[in-house]
Length: 170
Image 1 (cartoon, rainbow, N blue to C red):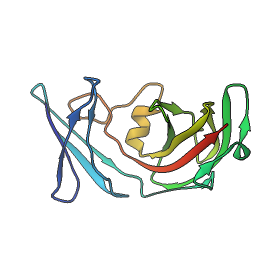
Image 2 (cartoon, rainbow, N blue to C red):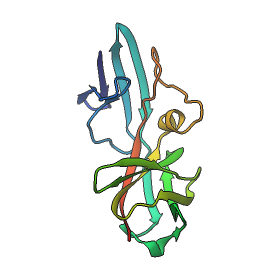
Image 3 (cartoon, rainbow, N blue to C red):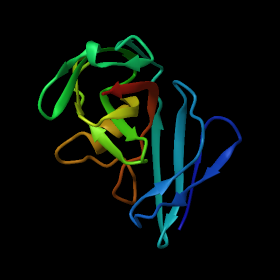
């Protein structure tokens, strides 16, 4: 397997296998609005894809860097937090929560730029990453039947912008 990612610059980033043999990662900082290319071969088969990072993503609600109980509504199992996103170039949204023990899980975001985050209740401090996906990531990650954008293979090559918040629950 030889796969690499490059943008308009001359910098080339190799992909690394993850613990899951069906996934690969690239460690790089993306530029807003930049188009990136995936090229290489897997088991002798040429693969390629193109994706463009959203141009803009901001979060006006929850507005503060720290989200507290007073910012939402507690139910038996979930903490509902209203959100308002502003983006250009994003077609889907997601979020990831990580607790102090390092457990990571996705959380539910509505289908558009406003709605409620449904966060599973866990006590203490949690990292919350709000994500704005480009069309390729949306097609692969958020559809009930994923759509691939990789020529010569099946998978998703997409991009996202992220905004960080802390969640503090008693």
